[in-house]
Length: 528
Image 1: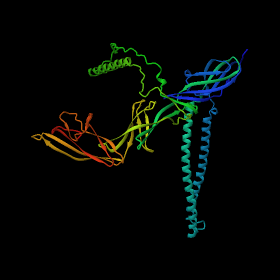
Image 2 (image 1 turned 180 degrees about the vertical axis):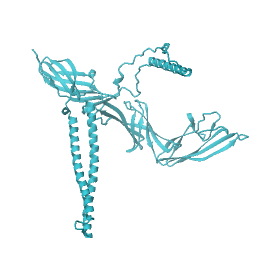
Image 3 (image 1 turned 90 degrees about the vertical axis):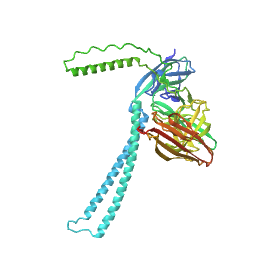
Image 4 (image 1 turned 30 degrees about the vertical axis):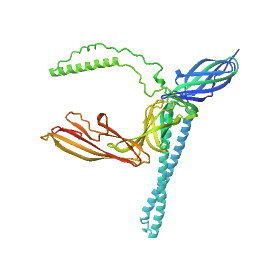
């Protein structure tokens, strides 16, 4: 008859981790050889944030194993059980010892400085017999005290610098220790598996569980290869976790799914409308002057209205889940093992790289800034959705700008802001502004603005430059704005003007932006 096996702590290693935007699923693997009968296999010191309802167990055995039961429990760790905290405590003790040694050294140096001051004062005072030191003796005292004082002051400065550096290091370690204690709260989870084997054999166990305290966000590097007219795009995941256990050389998968949203769509609840109930009767007030009574009635009516509105607001408020546009369902399995420590530090891992043919365009708004900005348009020809995130842009290998990109699905157009390019010179100058009377009797006013806009391509290749400017926008029919020049511009909403110049190498172009504003002379106009 098969016997009962004793419970044993099962050594295990983390083999794989799937990281979501708000959590992670960890998979542990363990192997053990067991005899026939029932056994309890215990996974100890698991993260305290382990979600019990997320447990999944897989078991394979040569001994015809059957999984009978899975139980979880909370265990409280002793201070010495946490090796990471022990290491931090030892580092803190070492730093404190070094700080104490520096304090001792500073005390000795300060004593030397005080001794020099006493020696200098004593050298200028007469002795018991009234004799004073000679000039030669005073010079000797001065030379000795100057040398001693210089060494003492230099030592104090050195000690102060070392103390500041050690205190910064100590503060960082203490913060890490505090964060570690908060994360673990000196608790852990234990998972116990009860298995039965029909015959002796080896059992391979896989344990998966979800934990909080982990996240990942996308990040990008875009390198514009000017000579090739293409963008080399690097797609990365920035992973952070403070789950209480390190992930060392694991198979890492990054998922864009959001388990917190649930698996089913929310159910719509009835939207109830009804007549607001009458307010409760007002208690009889004490006799009051007529004015006070009127004010009291008004205050009560306002309060009743507010209560009624509040009740209606409570009745029609609908529970809903908000789904971000970036919540696409995709998973990125990294090809190389990755390590992510449990200290919440940002670990950058590569997802993919792609070379995308790009169309380059320069844009300038000289009325706001006399600078040309480079942008590139490309198509997302990869099989990966590119979620919105920060973008570092490089021209060849030189960093030029930091910006963001929006979510781009496969096949959609991707637009990259690549920063300012000083190779394109843009200038906008006010040439003239004058005011004149209009109408037979001078009843009108006209203000005319004239700007000169210039651009020069100082690069060795032809470029396309899109310029934008603006006209004043009238909010009153008596104020009339007219564009006088140029004529070859595109007019958009809210007074926006835009036009495009093709500039060859070394080529310059210019135009005149001129417009007038007419209004009655007796009408005060703001914004001119």
